[in-house]
Length: 161
Image 1 (cartoon, rainbow, N blue to C red):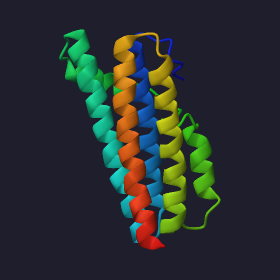
Image 2: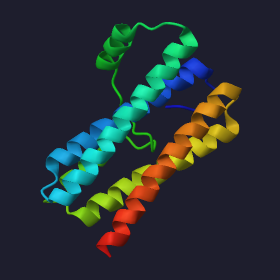
Image 3: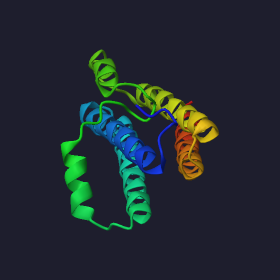
C-alpha cells in the first residue's frame, strides 16, 4: 500500500496497482449488476480506471525513458492488485456486492461515491506529504481525476433524486 515515502517510480507503480484493483472491482460490479443503469455506471468507471492505468503507464515510461510497453503489460498481468485506489481491499468490496441480491442504480452510486471519495482523500493526503516533488505532482493529477469522477457520480445522483 502506498505511503507517500516512495520515490516517483515506486509511487507510479503503487498508484498503477491501486487503479488496477479499482478497475477489477468495477468490472466485477458491472457483471453482477442486474439494473442496466447500475451496470452502465460501473462500466463507465472501469473504463476511466483503465485510462488512469494508461496515464500512469505513460508517465512511468516517460520517466524511465523506456518504452517497453510489452514488458509493462507482462508486469500488469503478473501483479496482483489487492487494494483499490480508496485503500479498501478489493475482496472486501466484492464481499459487499455479494450481500446484495442485485445492484440497483442507487446502490451502485453509493458504492462508487464511497470509493471515489476515499481515493480523492488518499491522493490528496499523498500529494501533501509525498517526499518526492514529482510524485506530489502525479498525486495532485490523480486527485483531480477522482474529483471528476465524484462530480459525474453526484450529477447522476441528482438525476435519480
